[in-house]
Structures are given as structure tokens and as C-alpha cells.
Image 1 (cartoon, rainbow, N blue to C red):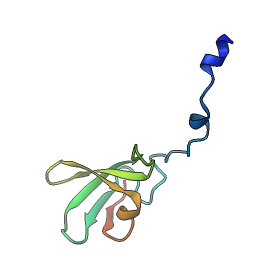
Image 2 (cartoon, one colour; image 1 turned 90 degrees about the horizontal axis):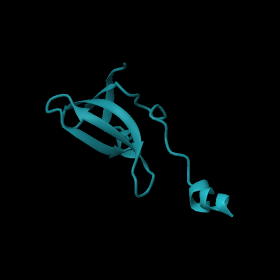
Image 3 (cartoon, rainbow, N blue to C red; image 1 turned 90 degrees about the vertical axis):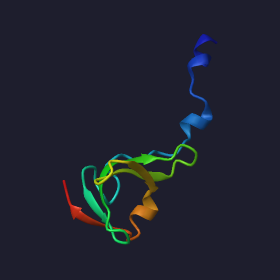
Length: 86
């Protein structure tokens, strides 16, 4: 009975696998150019949006050093081109 407390609830055992940081088209450290604005960005990692577990990139502006998050599907739909691969 004591061990029942430590069992994982079913919703934890059945949750979808989260993305690894290297699963995306753009790898951590890659430098990208936004085709519409010409802005340059550095990929930090591929993460998951908490509410939906949708994979999303965390990336940094090379000009302002602001950090941004964009869903993987948007990031890989042709808005960005690889400038430099790390």
C-alpha cells in the first residue's frame, strides 16, 4: 500500500515523447537569416511548448540579443535560411 503512492499516474506514463534539442532541421548553434527582414539569429535549442508539447525553437537575435520562441513548423517553412552551421 505504501508503494502505491510512488506509482506514476497513467497520464504521465502515456504522455508523448518530448523533442530532443537536436531533432530539428536547424541544430543548436546554427546561424539563420530571416528572409523577409534580413535579421540574423542563432538557434539555442529545440524545446516544447508547455501547453501543447508542440516543438518550438528558442533562438537569439544576433543584433539585439533578444530571445524568441517560434513553433518548429513555422521556423522550418522557408522563412529562415541557414547561413552558418556550427
